Length: 383
Ligand SMILES: Cc1cc2nc3c(=O)[nH]c(=O)nc-3n(C[C@H](O)[C@H](O)[C@H](O)COP(=O)(O)OP(=O)(O)OC[C@H]3O[C@@H](n4cnc5c(N)ncnc54)[C@H](O)[C@@H]3O)c2cc1C
Image 1 (cartoon, rainbow, N blue to C red):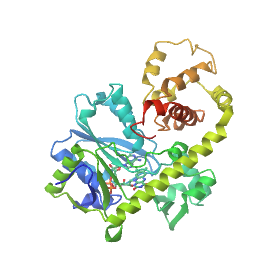
Image 2: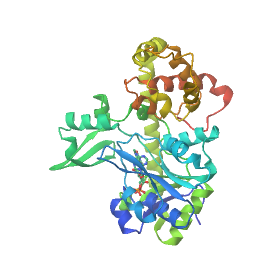
Image 3: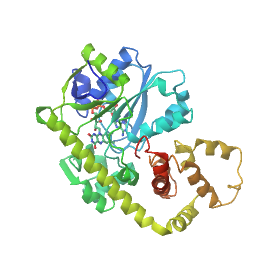
Image 4: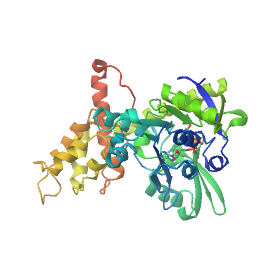
């Protein structure tokens, strides 16, 4: 019987899922069982869009359609909870399964706190996440650092600290550290992220800790809730999934890798926040003077949707015809989200003027946490 706290290696018996899966195909097999058993009405997952760098969300209701959604796309910059709020009525009347990274998990929690999403109707299968790469910078990095035409690449993966590509004529891997020292690699918010194993999802899946003959062939599954335990047990009983207890040595390795990733996140925070330093407000003022008032930062933020609503009603901070907007527009937005920025990076990634907005709001959030956390107690997740 599966229970909260269990640590397992799992792999699918479904041939179509196995072929396309990143590892053991446990995530996709679990969704197949969830749809077939009607534990969920639909599954919101990711699939390849126009090319390898285009991660596209899809809503699946037919289990036969699931196999094509298996596999990891590291160049996507999506945040799924906002789609559930915007297009799926906050899961008010529909049970939805979602594959989530740490930032997606936090987005769901923040939107549920604001009563925009009904978490009772959401099942989350988490994937560990060492970080993703922005599609534009991935293309540039592959051309500049790998010397390969990005359109000739048919597979990318992140393994053992390397970004690896397979392309017409060969394969090549370069260490993420080297890429990041040269200004490429993961998105800057992902570098600072300290939520690598999404334990607030119902299950947390990944490759860290899978050793021995199962390495690369099984998915590591940590059971994080009773709902997750029930789903896992049902999938095993149905025959779509097989599992065994994780190797104790694998557990140790997984804990070590997670620890090393958290330290790396801390290192990047120090680097980025120290660079901002005492001149933070001056820098914010200067950078936001490029703002063209497209409001993409508001539109794509999972926590500042009330600002979007206020803006549509008109605001004294943003006068029609005035560019850039009064600096207080951005200051007020930062203040508004300062206690709940989840460092998902959407504001920065989708900013038409490349303003490092995520850096600013993350710095403000962390400064606030550092100052007030002793009074407030420990946050439920570490972003
Ligand atoms: C960006 C990214 C970084 C990762 N980094 C690590 C890591 O450092 N360490 C580690 O242990 N594991 C990491 N993983 C998880 C790992 O790659 C596998 O997804 C996981 O082990 C499940 O394997 P599987 O064979 O069971 O999944 P599959 O059955 O192949 O299913 C994969 C699921 O992930 C979804 N998916 C694909 N791309 C994305 C995306 N960009 N955002 C959200 N969902 C997506 C698919 O739609 C599918 O539902 C990462 C995954 C992603 C997406």
